[in-house]
Image (cartoon, rainbow, N blue to C red; front, side, top):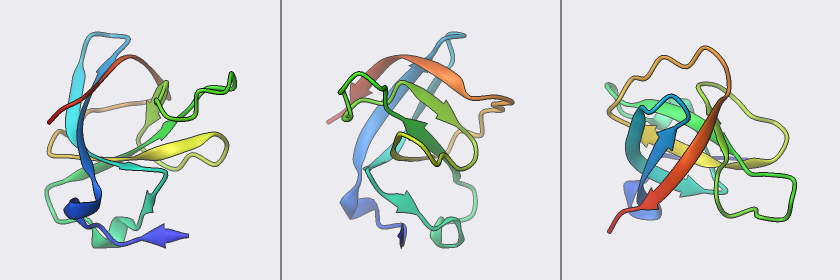
Length: 95
């Protein structure tokens, strides 16, 4: 099921990637956001949780769709070029 982009349903989050880059934005926990509803100028990423029972924190991120172990959608002003699924080494839920 796809959800419409609504920032009121998101929490602020910053992830640090394994290569040191950071992506900050609005995280929609467990929600697949319809790309057609995301405002122009924003980029969407999908995140994956691990296989070890921690389904709340994302461990990888990709520009595109994730089918297995989907964790949530991150919508950001940053347009980071991710050629492959990239490991997340730190997650910070901002206030």
